[in-house]
Length: 112
Length: 112
Image 1: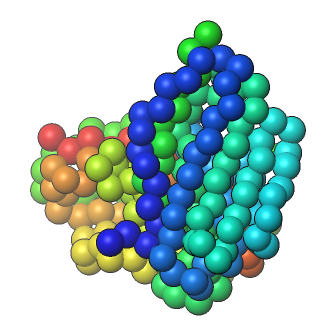
Image 2: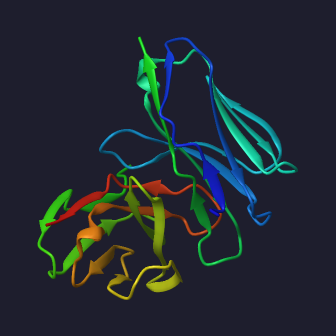
């Protein structure tokens, strides 16, 4: 079983919809939670970074962390075709050989 | 501010050959990590270097190796290439502590 589970999709929604992307994890040692966005033929770019349980908002993006359930989410409001990309959750732990662990990534398409 | 630079962008090699990939981190970033990305396995951690020392290593065979120079630039080498080594190889740099990693655009390696 992978330490970080993410549904690879693909996910296709109409423009303007609210998108919900999710990841679960099994290791309580993860303390920092991130979302990356990756466009085709590009490297991942950091979207959101959070430490504590709760919500963090940045424009149209909201990251939610529930440490008790080991569950994190990314919400995209008023989705745009330019949001079409692969979204990867990532989790960081202080101890361990591999500190930054990624989910599989969810491929998202926003249809005009 | 220059980002993470990876060279070359694309490579085609034959089975049995070896290859060297290069990564120049963001100025001031002392930590460089390497990842292999494939459609089936997602992002898999190869190794991390900090101040010229390998700090962590993932579960890859000894054919995969790396090093970091005094200017923080890093190289990874794959010897005796196999078809399964075809992947996008990503380099990420960070200041070295907890925090987001900045990725390069990757090197697309195809082994034929």
